[in-house]
Length: 409
Image: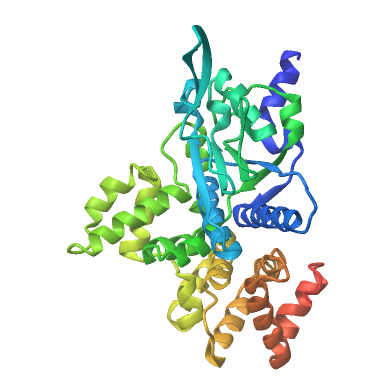
């Protein structure tokens, strides 16, 4: 490949080079889990369909490994079959960790019997997920063996139990990561490749479900753009990501449950998880509470209205846009119960915003699948305001339609 073409090739994002779908981590989890359930159901109905090996690619720390454990746990509960999980880390293993020839003597003749490690599932009639973590960072001899696992569900001459499925997960092979990819057209053909994007909504849904520390939840609800620090990652610095925020949440809970949170200690710990710049912003948010919290828009707009008016006065449209995104993120993840007063606050807030900023309220709703609770929740608020407030219709909805945003139905 000529040097200029090679450079262009390297500059492309991995999903652009492979020309594959980009989905949220939650959507990918649902796709894989549904496919496994459909495969098993087809077998039980007499159709011997093939298993699908999935290749999930995405930034480090976005939750690729975590969803594999969630899939195994949820399938166990939903199918009433024990789904085990074997997770292998390709960068720290070799081919000999899977299979070793062992000499045996029979009638004076020496032959070799293959010994298979505990990494290989052996129990007949068992179910499980075999997860290959960072496949493209393993050495080439290991990759060759793992290609057989992904393509044939076997190691050497030993076949996996039929109920075992394979998921391979990787960081993208682009400028932000160091990979050692062995090109294999047949392997690429047999896998289903899919790329996961960073999703603050998915992170917050998970964080709320797992009861992350409120400082973490409120910080990302207010600043979803800080969930993943791509710039720091690109230059090789410590970088904020979903996994690092989960670790920081644990540190906060440990301190709170053992005498209280000392922000000097938080700074020392968080800088090694998020980097010093992100840590300063997080501590300022948690300790000094200078940022406008989207929760306050919903619960007590009059108290923060002067701060919003000040942003408008300074024509700080960037901050107003961040505030609107944060408000929508809070609403779609927390989905708080509301009374008439809360709806009045929502209406007043939207009418305060410049029309192009206010339109984010509609476009954010429109990003959700129509069957999701978040879409139904936000749509109900919108329809209620539309029916009960002529001002909302005249000063918010009609101008957005005129600007070409289209109707929300």
